[in-house]
Image (tube, rainbow, N blue to C red):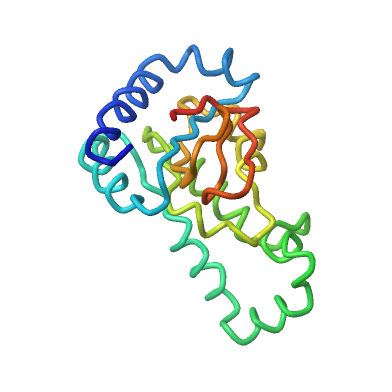
Length: 182
């Protein structure tokens, strides 16, 4: 289905979920997130429409900008060297348990800040997470995300196959802690 014929229903469904957020925890196995699925090739169209509809209510957290900020913390050369050392275990680079701030920490901090500012956190450009070892379920199951006053909305470039989202149209994704807008 094309963007023109599909987007209105999806945005109506998203608005319904946001306005009836008390239902999310029941349908999302205790989670507090909405996975908003759309074709990856139409991402800019969906983001543009979301910004038109939700600019006053939402904080758009751009993963691509956080990724660049994360790399800039130590500089490209240091990052490249560090990444080479852990290229087989990227989660150690982007989502480690040590006290140093990594990409995962930056994402959670941005989500919590948006919520504290009374904005709906909308996570966008999530395709940048491919290869980082950070999965949508890691974010959705984070204790701070699960306890937010309002739900996290994850813009998720994917196709739906047999009711399940496929991240970037090929990687099966978890929808356990969320409600999926298809």
